[in-house]
Length: 120
Image (cartoon, rainbow, N blue to C red; front, side, top):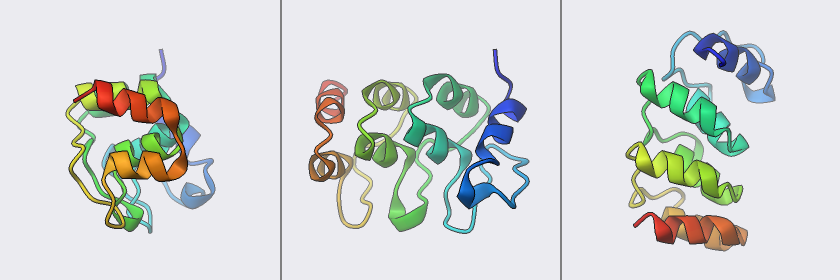
């Protein structure tokens, strides 16, 4: 099983985090995105649970107000959506004026739309 430090090292390879040393589950880069935002983009359910159980804010808003759930919806990651919802991710937070469901619809993320509707 991966450790939080393993996840941090993986994220430090992402362009927006390359020059950063992540030392907290709630660390934010210059855009306001946290490690949880990145693993939600990837749909990495193991890392989502690991970070959330270590205290990561599942409703943290990053760039343009996006939460990890918005990113999972945009990238059509239904399993990540279900994990985030189980961990308390809210669907009513607006990002660029859109709800999570609207973000999924705009992106054409059909599996994400189904997961969001199933999680209500």
